[in-house]
Image (cartoon, rainbow, N blue to C red; front, side, top):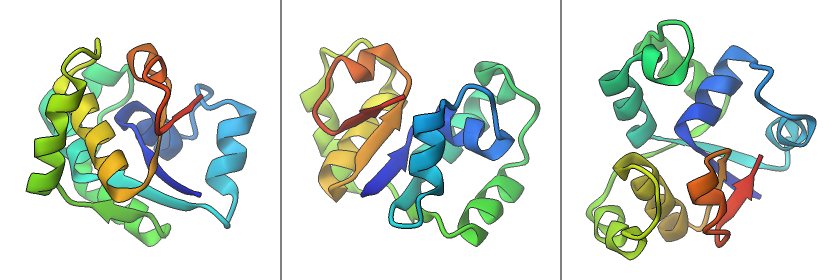
Length: 128
């Protein structure tokens, strides 16, 4: 399975957080799965800072390098992704989440998230 990690999930993975349940950990550790992170998440963390995610400060360069070294695939932001955001205007989530969902859909990825507003959408969502 090809999985795109939502921003909080990405930080939980990086910090080996207790927020990740056993099912999520199994999916992340399963070498048969292809894990992806988005430039959107790096941007979001940079803008909000760690305080927006209830965690310690994050060095974005180290986070990105660690993800790439661990075999994660980076998903850049493309115009096709931006155009897909309008489909999700009614979702009760922020613009970052909408863009991540649009990326996941366009790239054929499942979006792993714990956000209720995204989980309610169901299509293309891998809830944790």
